Length: 331
Image (cartoon, rainbow, N blue to C red; front, top):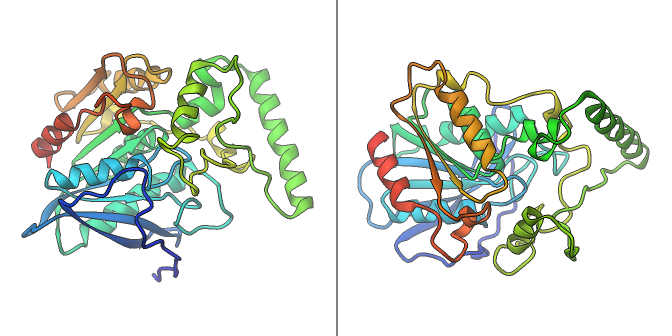
């Protein structure tokens, strides 16, 4: 297996300040589809021996220079070797065509990160965990249901991307007619793209923000379209995914066999987040008729909205002390 030569930015271009308590470097690894992934590695300064390790990714349409990097750097400050990676087809990672998503390939991206960490000379391969944020929170749990090497998983402010694509926000389009119209529109776009020889982008977070925009759209705008979280490689900050990029999520559900996950899982969500129902339902599915409930937990953060768990929302909403305690117990 050969990794591709990626062009990686060496300058610090994150949306968060650089810590003087960790060593930072760029690394690459390959998934089983031959796609080379780019990651930022964070190692506690003066660390000795093999360390517990955590792979981090998300949100859906974000890049590692945004909140996944913040999570990774913070956990490295607390003694873990971490990587924050860009999923296939996005950011600095490889994969053609660009700006596509896949429930299979994106689950594989997490598993490839586990491959990389397991063979790293600074990592204890028996102490590996993952963190997924927003849409990659769902991918992280999906990976935990498949990869027995993972000892602990955190899903923060998670989305079930299959559910929201197939049923709409709040399951408001959960009917055959709505799904048919959606599929017909995407398939028509496929022909336009083929004729044009290029993929039309769906657009990122709407800007300027309409006065009548729902709160969750305002919430995303406040992160992705402002100095708080804007990044030039982030799909959500710019032109978004390809219009056909997420088609396979409509009839390829994730989060199957959640109640068979034996490893530890911590699901974190904001009390006032529009997306909180995804976490509550995932936790219910994970613990229903399960023999492995003692190491499962749903933590609701009072008064927090969805993006508060991206960067703390100015109120330290991310419970890093809890994350540290969780990973120390299970790694």
